[in-house]
Length: 452
Ligand code: IMP
Image 1: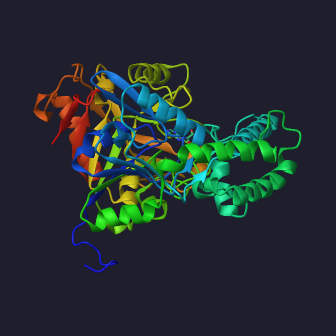
Image 2: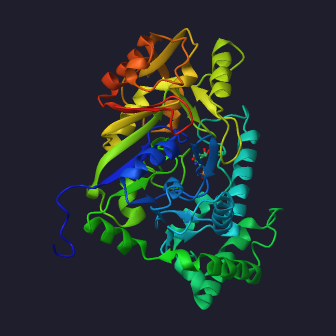
Image 3: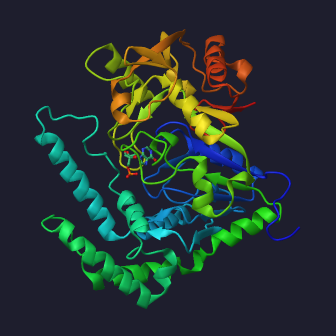
């Protein structure tokens, strides 16, 4: 086969979030990883939080692909990721301390680095947006508001990448002269915008930042590779790569609930730019979705269960049963009924071939479960996800009510062991979205999974 000839089949897979992140992708990646030779992250950074529970032991990963828990696999951080070296080091140390072999970890030389000033910019921008919102008469707006970012410097790092001149890539960490020049350029452009912001620390000190970056480079050096060739060579050799998405399709910078989104392409479309592997090498796309909805930060969420009344109580119940508190920031997540308008839209964007339904056990004990199948907007009903946040905030969900199930499902080993009403819920999802549910997760442990 010539170098650029495509392999006949599409040997790679992708795991992608169908909602606003936190769908349980880490567990699903961990389940599918054994059928692959390598796992690659292609977007996001330390804003993500992937939890995997193995034999009762919980691992929380932010930057490192969840596939690292299989020692024989390569775990690759692709060029589309924005890399926080301190967080990477912490995560490696944490894994090693628990006996996990991290020798298979590789980092793209083209990945961009989250610099200390990016975190300050993130915080300064959020603070100023909050002040703007509070200064408005009603103190609330669906459009002009802080995004509620993780303050991990994600947006500013991606913005720097697009600005170009002062952006630092992992490869630059190994080249002191280039590094210092880039940092000096970046800091020169930030001094004015951050003037007066109190918490800049040493982030605008060129020498301090350069010294930090050089130290980071020495630590990362053994892991740095041209992962673009590495991944393409693996694919050409018939190896199977699993692409692990971070965040969720509804947080995608292009396709999500803009502007309340993250800075990267979280959908399958991000694989090409984020790894250099053509997306047509991806055959199987597993869309991970919770049995209900959650969201962290600001932005519209049509099915949100909030407020002092019955809805808020159901929301609290789901939040507590589902332990819906951020892996990255600890923030309580906003909770809502399942929104199938949104999931169907995400399935379309990603070319999802199969669904993985997570957290089904959390819904046990509810008399009725509601599923949004349409929105009412501008006096009409629509089954389309709306393109802008203001419209989505004004849309009212149209629900189909299904009977809930009271049984504990967390020990079910097959779909037939699930109560009839839980099975009916799954079938309703399959029929409405038009895609089979291939995996059902009924608890956090690897073993609490039903695969069809
Ligand atoms: P950023 O990615 O830190 O810029 O945050 C942008 C928005 O995406 C905020 O609403 C965050 O809460 C949200 N976000 C980013 N990553 C995740 C994630 O992995 N799960 C859930 N929400 C996320």
